[in-house]
Amino acid sequence: MLSRQIAAKLQEYETPFYLYDVALLRQTLESLMSIASKYDYKIHYAIKANYDARLLQIIREYGVGIDCASGNELRCAIEAGFDPKQIVYAGVGKRDKEIRYAIEQGILAINCESIEELHLVNELAGEAGRVVSVALRVNPDIDPKTNHCIDTGQADSKFGISYEEILSQVDDIKSLMNIQVIGMHIHIGSQIRELHVFENMCNKVNAIVANLTQLGFELEFVDVGGGLGINYDMPENEPIPNFASVFAIIKQHLKVGARSVHFEFGRSIVGQCGELITKVLFNKTTATGRRLVIVDASMTELIRPALYGSYHNIENITSEEEQRLKYTIVGTACESTDVFDENVSLPITKRGDLLTIKSAGAYGMSMASCYNQHDLPGAVYSDTL
Image (cartoon, rainbow, N blue to C red; front, top):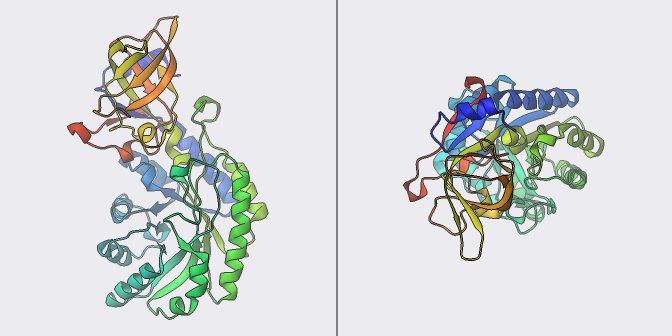
C-alpha cells in the first residue's frame, strides 16, 4: 500500500500514469542475477514486456541480455546500448528488412520459427556475404497450465517449428550454407505458476537436444524461454518471483551437457515494479443496482483485463473513509469490455480519488494504444518523488 505521503505527491501528476518502483526493480534484478550466477545461466530480458527507457537503462546495468520479438524491439535494444552478442531475436513473422537489420547487427542468434524462415535467413545472409548464427525454435507440445491466450508451446500453436517437421527436413536444413545452427529454443507460455511444468519442459528438451545432436547439429546453447508468473492476487506477499525454485528445477532435470543455458524473463522482472495510477471521474449506479466507478484510465492504458480477462489488484490510495462498498471499475473507452474488475471492495470512493491498479509493470505500457485518440500515459519513477 502506498503511503499517504507518496499518495499526496502523486496528486500533483496528470493521470493516468505508470508509477515505477525503481528500488524493487533493482532488488528483483539483484536476486535474479545472483541466483543465475550460481548456475552460470544466461539471462535475457524479454523487452516486449516493457521498453521504458529508464527501466532499460537499469536492466542493462546488471549485465542482462535481450530477447526481441520484432525488428523495432531489436533496434530499441541496440539503441539502448545492449550488447548485440547478448541479443536473441524470435518471432513467427519477421519481415525481410528486420532480418537484414539483425544480420547487420551481428546478434547472438536469430531464432527461426519455420523452415521457410530458415531459407530466407540463408538467402539474405548470402546477399550480405555472411554466415549467420541461428537457433531452431522448436514447438515442444507442452501444456503450460496457464491462460490459453498466452500459452505458446502446444502442438497447434503458431509458435515454433514442429519437431516432426525438423526431423523430416534435416538434410534440407544442413544444406543451407549461409546459416549455422548454434542453438535450440523453446518457450512454452507465460504467467506459469505451477512450477512442475518446468520439469516436464526439461524432459522434452533433453530428448530434443539429444536427437538433434545425434542428427549432427552442433548446439552451443539451449534457450528454455521464460514464462515464470507473478502473484497478481496478493502482490505484497511476493514482490520478487521465486527464481530460485525454477533454477533448482532446471538444474536438477535439464541434461544438456556443457551447453550454456539461456532464459528469457520479462513479466517476472518488471511486472511487480509498475502500477497504473488513475483518477476517479464519476460514480453512478446502473438500473440493476451495480455501482460503477468511472476512472480516467481505460483499456488503452492497460488492455490485459479486456483482452484476456486478467486480474489486477485495485486499491483506493487517497480515500479516508472506513466504510467499504463493492464497485465495478470501468474506463473511458467506448467499449463494453473496458472493465478493469467487478465487485472490488474499496473504501467509499468519490470523484477525485486516486486508484492504483497493481502489478502492471509488464504488458501495460508496452501494449498501450491511442484508441479513441487517447494520449499515451506518462511515467513517474519512485526515486523522483
